[in-house]
Length: 419
Image (cartoon, rainbow, N blue to C red):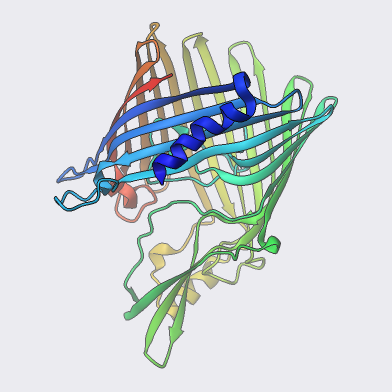
């Protein structure tokens, strides 16, 4: 079945579009050893990505990127295991572009990124994150969505509308307690938004420039891609039932960037209007404001330095009410949020000669002192062959945002041949 699908993927565009169809892609070997004893491999295998693109006349185009991924860690090592185990086939992006005089439309599975700051973008809420697979490739740690995107060009203003008919959550490791107030948690139930038209997500964005500053204003109505965890006490069996759900919210955002000489100043912020409008539901996220202020410095053509300040402000937050309610329900006070949360992030990008580049990304939480570090070294071995080396490192005290993910720290080595 997979072989037949492979042949159709290769042959059909050339049959439909002839010489206009272009085939490319890459082959990549990857090895991701975990950095915690006993140092198992989190990922080990090979990926073939095929990219097909074609112009369909003057007003349309087609693009598809399809991954054939062999993951040795998912294969059965027993002698009677099936030979196809560990092989998965999935589309990364597959869409059709339509071009008109004052607008263009993209329909299909795609990436849609909003925001102007680095790495942390309060307005960028369309494509989920895959926090388990952060590495050198964007397609590994961001998940595409099936969407319709339309850009309308009105002179100096570009309007963008996005419709996402089906919800997709972040891939995020959850560490859930087995007890609540000394009583057991019997089971967990995950409730995703139903696949119906009324649960669609949609967004609007306007991009424009004024006095050498690029701005955008945005609105997004969709679901929080991080789960809301609720505990339901069942007196008949004297325990708790845990539900994992996803709440709808509205996001009102804005960003800007301006440059002068070797400097760039950028900022991005969003107001998140959640279900907990009055702040009285301690199991739901309060409305909150999150913003990022950043500064870029380019001392040479080969070096970029970036530093950013990030703050989240909980609104409708009553500490005394939160504390008393948690004590009444037997919830640990250690999970009570702070009204203000501050972080720093940084990025260093350096081109070392003609063939080697280094990128270093980090995020540091000021309160807990925990941090995330992502160094990536890229060596262009020869034309079409790149060697990547790096690591995703989580450090911090137990229970801190990055500290509780320490077990996911790993190195990665990838050899990629592009054709």
